[in-house]
Length: 446
Image 1: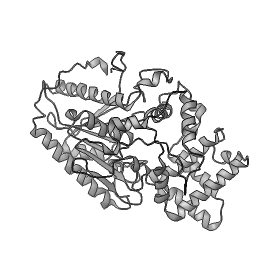
Image 2: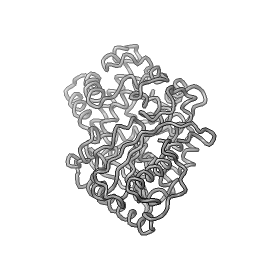
Image 3: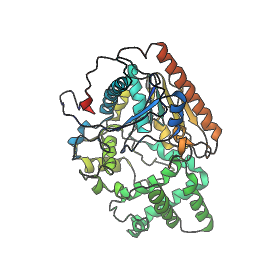
Image 4: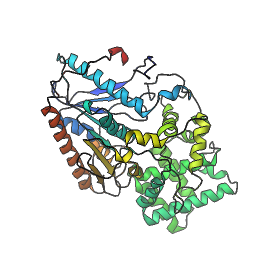
């Protein structure tokens, strides 16, 4: 894998393939982009239903630096300079050519080029859209599921959406909890951190960010009742709100969901030799601090999260963890990709109505760039692929537990119609018989 135009060092990139549904040799290839975490296989989500329907080969490469695909043992700021969305897109292009050649060799077809379609969710959803934008000749189209294509410096809409998704009663209970925790911290009661099993977080901002994330996750991943039911109940009964919320954080966010308290600790994030399983936290913060921001700050009025989670908190974290000079130039990122004014074609955007991330996605639909909003009370991040709730995900992205399965199924049908049309347009252009671009990718690259 080429690291830059001057740097010819190589590293191994892990990938997975699933060929059970592949109608060889002329079926399409579905490329599922693994995002900002270790890639542990291809999810059995709605993607597998679509692969079966179209007779597609499924292949999924791991993002550079994450999991087992890291060029470096040590993740110093200096060594992280090759970690960016731009580099990831070149990796995908190189991988696409490499994999096409392995398929051709396997089925003894020289120079054939399959019809490719690219999929991704969240940050990988943005990569899916950007791949089609930057390499339109390498894919017939893209699905950007909850694709966050807009880099945002002050992402206040994130918190506003949490309030909307929560509804008046639950929002009021969350806001009161935040006020109470803020008050306890202000009067020097650090025992409140102990209550949440988070006494290791010496920085108050880190602790408050953990709490804000814990609340957001319930709406983001289609589990609103896990946080709202106990809080609304406690408010009615006059039970201690902070204790009730702490129970939710420990049992659901840390217990069931598997969040790590340590990952909120800036001291922990400074570690340049984390295990591959834990490296994702530092790596993603680097991408946030150097390129996309998405700073989830408190709006000036009516905020659900603590007002202490502001731009200063995020910038201080970036400086503390990565040193001076690492700064998210969102203007340049949006200039390069277009933000929500992305001018590609044949990219589908799909978002869940309760998902706070949808405000960084493209929500306006057009003929070339259809965008769909799946509306229901537990439709969150990547509902189109994952079903409801979105975490833990259900086999084949089962939509039956969505508060409106029809809303999900309707958008899924529209997605399939676009894929069907765009794959057939690719075949009409003789995509299947064209010789590959002159290929210089050696097998040793992967």
